[in-house]
Length: 157
Image (cartoon, rainbow, N blue to C red; front, side):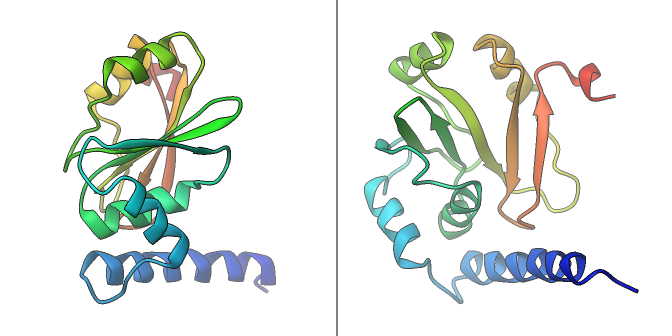
């Protein structure tokens, strides 16, 4: 017998994938909250400071699905930073890098267009090492799946 909580969880992940696909293909739009977030960072390399925990991991995936660009969520003690990257990267400016290196911000999640296995790139791991952060998340805006990854790939074995 399948536990009802597990059943809901499975159907929920499938509905997220279907919903992301509809947004990615232009068959559906963003909800009001996510559209407001996108309106704050409409262009590549834009970023904005927002109230802490006003952006979720799932929001990042939907913004990427709508634009086909990577997004990143950085979080500090009092603020979230939402960053609009380019199609395959997030290039942070010196101000954000300094805040990450001095631990005033941490990289919570960034998005990828991974279909099956979410695979952190060499650059992803190298960036975590550069900012001296041990781990972060990657969210696939294709499947809606999330993977934690570490700066040192051997720590994941």
